[in-house]
Amino acid sequence: MLLFFKSLPTNCCFNIVRFGSTFSPLFSDQVTREYNATNLREAETLIKCMTANMGGTELLEPLKWLKKNEPPVGCARQIFLLTDGEVSDVDQPSRALVKGLARVTNGHFTFIPPQTKVDVHVAEQLARALQPSISNVHVKWNTNQTILHSVPNHAPPVFARDRLLFYALLDESVTFDHATTVELFADISQEPLGVARIDHIPSVLDSQTIRRLAAKSLLHELLHGEKPAARECIIDLSLKYGILSPYTAFI
Image 1 (cartoon, helix red, strand yellow):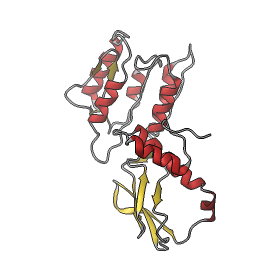
Image 2 (cartoon, one colour):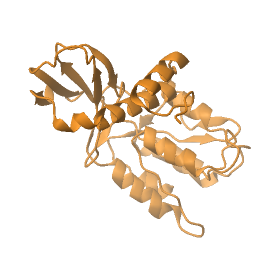
Image 3 (cartoon, rainbow, N blue to C red):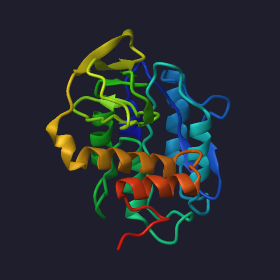
């Protein structure tokens, strides 16, 4: 852990949040503090005396606390979660939980084998986190057609060599708009980072594959968002596009 903190860039902000039956941030007056010599000394003092003495492993509450306290505009938050997987919010040590957290946050996960040094694996994750990134990425669909749904609603930060897909489900009863454009934006610029012109319907759409991928992404967001959608909405989308949901079954 000491090696990890001494490897952080000098222009960042940080905090340490210990969690067990409760959770306890190192800096309780702020979500993060500037990375400087004074704050680093406080972190070193905590790390040297840190033990597994906080009871169970309630992971949900510290994550909700972080979600409630958003980072400043234009800044990308990096969360390094170290856990043995035995989270008391679930029935047993869960590899699926770790993988799921990485997937929905556009992050990466590493399972550390027994009898190996944690520092090596944490350093690899830090190297990924220090790659260039853009935050608050969003698209603008310029079309005369009615956009029924657009996903994702909130895109995660995008790092070098990452891939991020945006989908729009349009009203198919309206004639295709051959002047459609899609603009990509991020916080770093008021001007679009890129513009795509869509002047024809690709033949690949005839297979319904793209529609089903878009519907699957939409259903996942509606089911796992902050405010899950109504059951009727989930069922309608599931039946319309043939995507399995918790409320439907196909025979």
